[in-house]
Amino acid sequence: MTSSTTKNNTNNTAVVDLQLNDPVNVIRSTHQMYFEGIVAHLGPVKFGDRSNDWVGVRLTGNSVGLGKNDGSVQSERYFRCSPQGGVFVRKNKVIR
Image 1 (cartoon, helix red, strand yellow):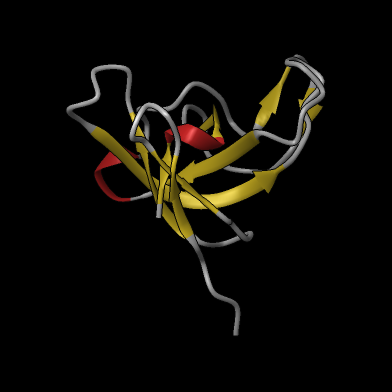
Image 2: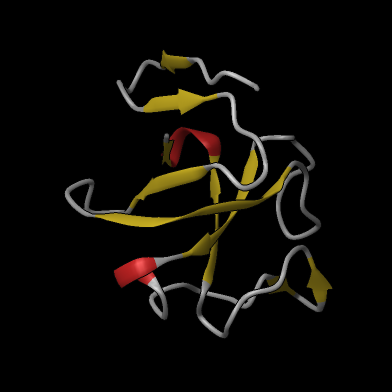
């Protein structure tokens, strides 16, 4: 069993130690609404900088269909989900 530690960054946004399949909420740009989902990818991506700061989330519940991709970006597959069923965000946008 693993534990998750919550920390605060300078923007008071929750940052967490994540594992694949963790249930999470993703802060949307309005900061008043959230996507819900499951962590499906952790680490670098080819479409952004090479940092390990990226989280791919397979959306669940009422968030299904509100995403931006199907787990792939620019022909690179990171995880599988329905069309518009996934998002990629920085860790500081994820709350566990």
